[in-house]
Amino acid sequence: DSGVTQTPKHLITATGQRVTLRCSPRSGDLSVYWYQQSLDQGLQFLIQYYNGEERAKGNILERFSAQQFPDLHSELNLSSLELGDSALYFCASSSFGTSSGYEQFFGPGTRLTVL
Amino acid sequence: KNQVEQSPQSLIILEGKNCTLQCNYTVSPFSNLRWYKQDTGRGPVSLTIMTFSENTKSNGRYTATLDADTKQSSLHITASQLSDSASYICVVPRPGNTGKLIFGQGTTLQVKP
Image (cartoon, rainbow over all chains, first blue to last red; front, side, top):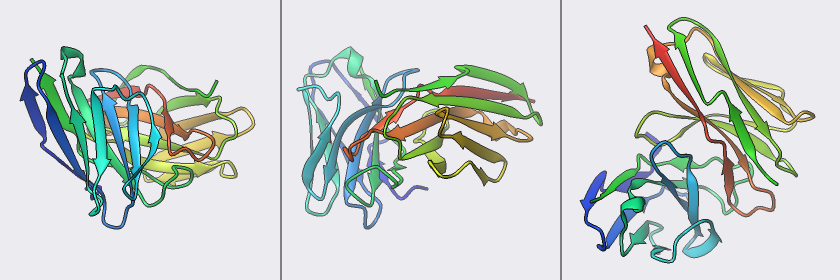
């Protein structure tokens, strides 16, 4: 158990809908990272927050947004969902704002299925 | 271009056998390299983190090596078990303290009885 929790575990929805994925980092970790992993694909970095502020952005679509709250939990909002958004979404956390030298701990993921 | 490439893409071995997975990177400047194990449908779990000054690091039956000169790393699995069946991912931080990681595509290992 990494100490990172994600809810829900599974999510099934229809095209055009909007969903919210939630992540609670390990106790004491200030950074939260979101990743997307499509079937048989590698992990794609979406976005990072550090202590409530956006720190780095990856290949995140404009239909997607995220935020980190004062209690350090984070939410990833996906809107106008398309079939291609079906994937595993992982959250990771680390102690500091940069990845160099500091391990990222991954949550169990949320499997999103868009029908 | 900063890249991480892994080989082979997939591998099937018999239980009890050894195997070696390869990772080549072109990331510069280099800070560290990580190997993660990802079970199907689960989050990646760190196996080792190696800095440029480390040549070898072991974690149980897993031994990682790093050659910073040739920019190559390997992960050797000894006496494989069925539970070793997973995807093994090589990861290098993107330079510049951006918080971003560069992921290899992974090697899918299947251990058969």
